[in-house]
Image (cartoon, rainbow, N blue to C red; front, side, top):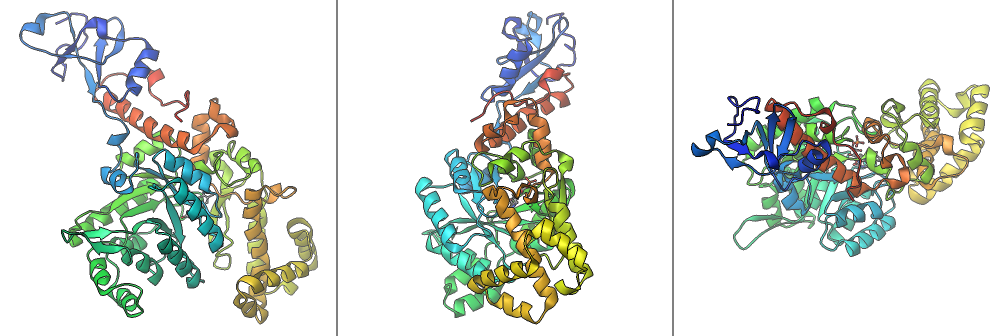
Length: 542
Ligand SMILES: Cc1cc2nc3c(=O)[nH]c(=O)nc-3n(C[C@H](O)[C@H](O)[C@H](O)COP(=O)(O)O)c2cc1C
């Protein structure tokens, strides 16, 4: 063996490398490590230190005395396919164990879904908050652009309006939308059970065919459990009785889980329980194992994770904890394809990790539910929190002290509260007159509806770029965005107009695969040069 090798006695691998095949130049080594189609054989040279070759020879008795260097560490030809569950890629027909989560009001726009879909990446259209005709137009456009997928639509639970949820399901069934991202569910509803069961059949071999796939996004174990189990017989029976599904579909629905995939949602942008990913994911994974042991499904449920994933390092950590796939949201809103205004995307590109906070949610304002939003460059969180404080302190608009009321009218509503109420009545009389009936004899409820005017419009202003209302933009984002911006600092990605969702997805996936290689080398005891330790955004991936 070559005397220049420093650890010849300790070589754990049966290979040796010819010195002329070894690179010691950091830039060349970076390219070698990024080339996932080839293995890397690492040597520790006495003079040059860390070096990489892409070919090696088996050490034989005869070769033992050659001048070749022993291999100190090895990483196989493995790239993004080593990350996550292969079944996720196969079942959804995608290239990566990755998807872009829905962002309401079409922020996850047709452009976003189509751009990602064309690159073989799954994205959920942001159907929440949109009227059915708008969602239908999106279905038509997305299906025309992606006749074979991949794409999905968000099916959001509407606690106060089951008809809205039923309408969405009917729309998805009518247009054969084959995958939904079900979210905000507190339990199963007849609507989601209908969607799932209506897609079930048997193939010629008698195997159950799941026609309608469900990815359920949850942040609590009790909700996860419901989606991991088969649909309840009672709910199925009702659907059989009203002719929505067949008796055979009822039978099949009891053999498969309600969801194919469970997305554990940690501390994310928008609605969130702010759970740390490192505590939530293992808990949901353990639950999955329990349920699988009990039900012995032919295809086990997959558990993926989102909420905080905004960098290659976070992506790898999530996969290493056992996630079948990863989910992003916040980072995609800053991309050119997102249905967010220029002003908002520009602001998002400079948002730091501590620039997000919790503020009252429009949809569940009265219940005190909050969501995660940007707090720098907008006064929305402060103003929305003030509205909630006033709502809890007074029983009616009339009970608000005059100076307080005047301040609200001047700074927040820019109109008298009487005028806002008149507009609110007109709005609901068109969409949902019951809301007004319920508020007429209930002054507290009336106050909530008036305040929700601001909470509802402020997110639309952010999307449409309402001029003059910039300081009221309600911009949903989580800490993942700040982590991404920090990682991207100083690169081409600093320019918000240079951010596209496919590029970001590939940076996360290829970056995670790269870091996986680096970690595996480090674990074998070699000292990787500092310049090679990170995946940097120094080149466009798409
Ligand atoms: C602007 C924005 C809007 C969102 N709207 C929805 C939505 O309508 N439905 C939904 O299921 N999730 C929604 N989410 C959550 C995302 O789909 C995704 O699960 C989450 O953002 C992932 O966490 P991250 O923000 O840390 O990346 C939204 C997130 C953001 C940032």
